[in-house]
Image 1 (cartoon, protein in one colour):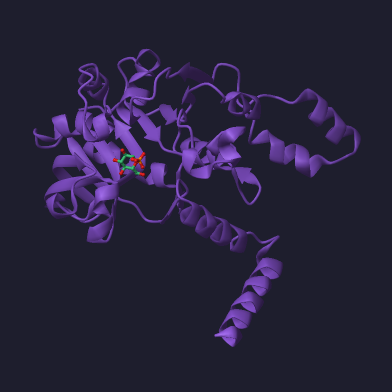
Image 2 (cartoon, rainbow, N blue to C red):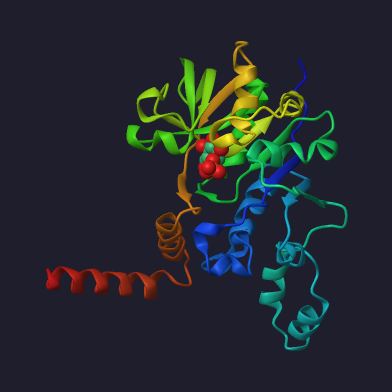
Length: 298
Ligand code: G1P
């Protein structure tokens, strides 16, 4: 069987980001920065590295800053050119998208992640596609989606990123029911969105990277309400899992940060700050001093 290449990706970015109020009153959560790059830039870079050519954003009201971010900025660019700031011009290049490479569709009612993905159905058509949740930032030597695309080229079907979580955390995630553990790839026979603590089928949580078949869009057409009364992407994938060979989990190599939570965002900020050659020394010695002070105060 010839497996179709994955060239389209959906970025659900319609959420209100209430956990980050008041900041998100006037800026989209996805524009909040880790060091000097907005969250969305990390997701886009990861998708590009995995061979994605078409980027579909599912947005909502108040997200125009996102559209501007990926557009050219003629005044800024000419000012930088005049000032001879070539390095900054180079940095800006990552934010530019070719005309036609990026599309925006609106989710006009907040009805859940499954519904958000479904909003992109016409742009996806009859092709496999990736979904990236920008809240999940994954630091990895080989970008997570690229690892998944390589695994998917062996398996076909649907593939979700998976990570072990402590049992008491499972109810915050979609959780896999595993039929066969083959190491980095897992054969999945079921999935449950936000199970009760004692009902989780495993401690393998779904992390926000997916490679999906167009059949998932058909399943979402049913608009079946799931956990929290929302239309859940997990349920549409779980429908496929009843047939062996249709759904796989993928244990990625990398460190995931939950940038949808304040603590996770702060952890990512520290980790990315320390990984930057231009900041490592100054920021690292500040943290060391801070820890020494705290120890002394104890
Ligand atoms: C979403 C998905 C969930 C997944 C999680 C990963 O939940 O519905 O299955 O485990 O992302 O971050 P959310 O975090 O949007 O509640």
